Length: 327
Ligand SMILES: *Cc1c(COP(=O)(O)O)cnc(C)c1O
Ligand SMILES: [Zn+2]
Image (cartoon, rainbow, N blue to C red; front, top):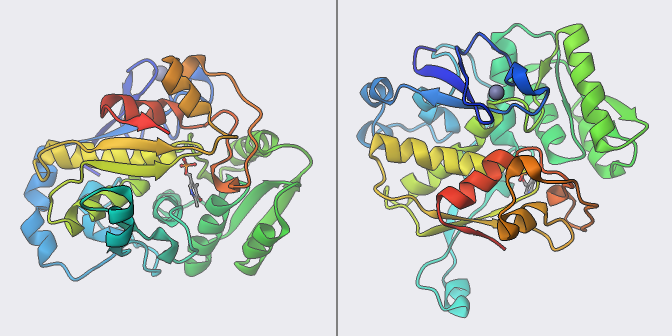
């Protein structure tokens, strides 16, 4: 992984070699989320838009030199990535806009965006020779990890709060996961998952904790820009719960800008449900990510329900640094 320079703590700015720390900056408990820093000069010698145009692989692995995995690591066989970007002309007209596109990540193997991150988790877990890969989740992140693990016969253990919807638990069981129902909340499940991973040496995929999940999610911005002929859109609207997707989209755009493959940064627009608007509130009131307090989130959109978004540092930076907005 000579193309990965370091992991930088987004709280204190300390940097670590990629093999020095596994997940978070040791100075802030579980909160010290890390950002992966790359050697763009080296990457530019390995990959460029012309080379991509000649590559027939439609999956996220076409961007492998920009991903935090070893060049020779085997990847899951499922087609993760290469989802359609549809022109939505009638929608554009109804909104009084000239161009609107819709990126359909419901087409990914387990039917959500989370496959982009879980594909990376499976590769990282296997690079480390982990016997088990684990996560805590109430929904799509668990399904994605379970599905991607199933595709390579990788053992996995999923911690879910006992209140999780039975249909989502059924999906995990169909994929052959070991599912542990935790008597408690999502946060209790998260804590138990961390402790089990530490005690048993399992590889941990948790959102807002494992620094490589944003790196998987950033592949959507690579695809969007490549599908638009490297002409970056003005704005990208992203549904936001924990904030890992919007943080990842931002990271991908920063990569492309640093490489000179796009020439401007789109404004990022975070979309939250009215009943789960912690990041919207923080953005409006100018609150720093570390000063945010948990809210009682309630929304029927269960995939974006988050009382204290785990990836709030990256999620607020995505909107503030691009002069975007939360709605
Ligand atoms: C996870 C998820 C989101 C939100 O992603 P975050 O990284 O938690 O902000 C939005 N929509 C769907 C369908 C999801 O599964
Ligand atoms: Zn730190």
